[in-house]
Structure formats: C-alpha cells, structure tokens
Image (cartoon, rainbow, N blue to C red; front, side, top):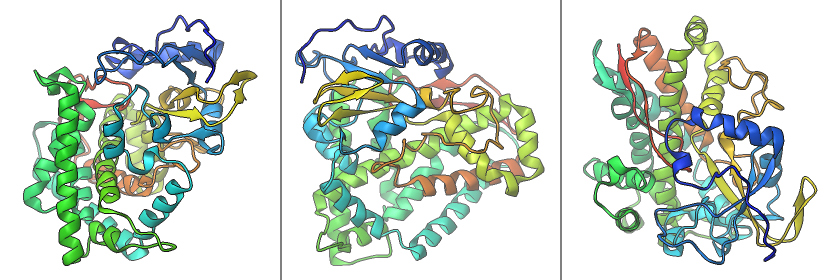
Length: 421
C-alpha cells in the first residue's frame, strides 16, 4: 500500500461526534461532498472498540455517489470484503470479533461463493412460503397486543418485535431462549450508545454478546444434528452443495450475522417508515387509498428513505482508479449508502418521500454484486405485513414525540419513537 502522505479532507466524517444526532443533520455535509468532492480522503475512523488508533492505518476514500458505490459493489475482482484486510466495518475492529461475527459478510470468493450457495440452498420455495405465513401471523399478533387505543414506544412494541420473532422461528430458537438471543443481538449494535452501554466496557460487551450467540448456536447445531427439526438450523447442518457442508463454527457466525443484520433492516425501516408517513400525510393517504397496489413501491421507498445500514467498506485487491484518482492496492474505500440514496443524479427530488417512486434503484440492501443482501426478500415480506396491519387496523396512528436516534456510523437507528393511536 502506498505510504504517500496526502492531506485529509476538511470535512471530518471519521469523528464519533459526527455520527451523533439525527441523519438529517448530516445530509448537508454529504450534499456538499457529492457536489464538490465526490471522492475525498479522510483520516481513520474513530472507534470506541480500539482506544488507540492503528499507526499503520493511513485513512480511507469516501464514496458518496450512487454511481461509485454501485460500481465498487459489483466489482469483487478489484474490491475485497475479506478479513485479511480488516473486513467491512468503517472503523477498525478486533480480528477475533470479525471471525465470530461477520460470516459471509467479510469473505471473498471462492469461499464466499461456496458458503453463500450453501446458505441460499436451504431457502426452498416451501420454506419461503412457510416463512411468509409465519410473518403474516406474527404481524397480526403484534398489532393485536397493542389494543385498540393507547400510546406506546413503537420501537419496543412493534419494530423490534417482528424481525427477532421471525428470525427465532426461522432458526428454531426455543421460546425460553429468545430474550437472551435478542438482548445479545441488540448489544452487537448498541455497544456505542451511552444509554445502552452504561458503565460497561464496549469491547467486553461485544465479546460477551458474541460468546452468548455462539454458545447458543453450537447448542442448536448439536441438537439438530442428532434430531433434525423443520427449521433453518437443521437445514444448514445438513445442507451440502458441490460436496461442501458448513461447519458448526460457520453456522454460528452466520447465526450472529442473521441475528444482527436480519434484525436491524426491518426494525429500522419500520420505525423510519412510520415516522416518514406521519411527516408526509399526503403519502399516507395515498397508500391507504390503494394499499395492495402501492405497498410494493412504498416498501422500496421506505428502505431508501430510512437506509438502515449507513456504511460498509471495501479494500483494493490491486491498483485501480476512481474518477481518475489512482487507488493503490491495500487502500480502503467507505461506501456511504445514505448519501447514495439522496443522490439527485439518480433520484428526482431525493428529499421528497414518494411511495410511487419508479424506478427506485436504492442501495438500502447494498449496491448489488456478490454481497447483495441475502435476506432482502424476507425483509420486504416483513415490511409489507407490518404496514398492512398498522395502516389497516390503526389508520389514525400518529407520532406523539420526537424520535431518539442511535449514535454510530453503522446502523441508522431510531431508539425510541412514541406513537398514539
């Protein structure tokens, strides 16, 4: 990797302070970068997990346009997600955490291709139909529990419940274990939130949560190997593609990924979607007027609008260039998905919620290529189901307080959102 010193951009995307507060506060910054410096060089990202910065880390290139993020996402020959380069998180993460937590997220081909093929093989049409039926029943039960009127925290009462319930039933997590799994998965995302962290050490919290999730996953694998059930863990234990089977360790890492990534995409999009409809009553009225005809594009717009995952990084396998700028092998780029989803070169009136937007090539599930979100269709099914229940049965639901946002550069999270109905 080049050791040439170059000045860092005057806009600091790397500080922890920048990622406090609502996403709207950051949008003018990304507007400016897309307009003036669509490719910019930044100091290494600050991290609460590593108290001392890596002296060998020179920084990263910020990708803020839709075109650049899509191009890098789809070029796995040039751009690596692998652990040999530190994985895909914006900030540096201890290697032990990468190995235990990221599964196929931080792999390159050929291993990535093989594991993804094995995992994808268990999602048969019959299993997908079963999952869809479960999701519809779960969404109905969640709204049943709300009652006909009241005031609740939407995140706790609705947004957080559906994805973890779905994942638990898909995987085969016993009901008595679900609270433990949910709490550990939440800690994997909220370790930098002072409200959640308290007096705990963030790195220790991360390790403790990983140990809990891995321990549960190993127990499930051993039980299903001896006595298979009709669930995802059993299917993963027995699945084989081209002679390849998953080890218990690989299943445990995927279990962590599924528990975290499979939770937050739906959870955050639900909260952001409800908030967006409340602030755009014309769009809510439009959706209610023809729910079946408009919920498909509406879900895509909710994902674009909320952009639940804010960043991922890639590292150059080889010398390349972006926008005429030479990028040396080993240099990093960070993809800012929220910025891409507000790119006026791609989206007409990007700061306008439009549930009929078509086309809508958002990067809320990634920019395409080998690492496109494996659970995107499950997330879409969950979002259709929960908005169906909320809007049909509680059409007067309205936000009754200001949202509280999760700090951090990874998940675009809403911690609390009071609603009245």
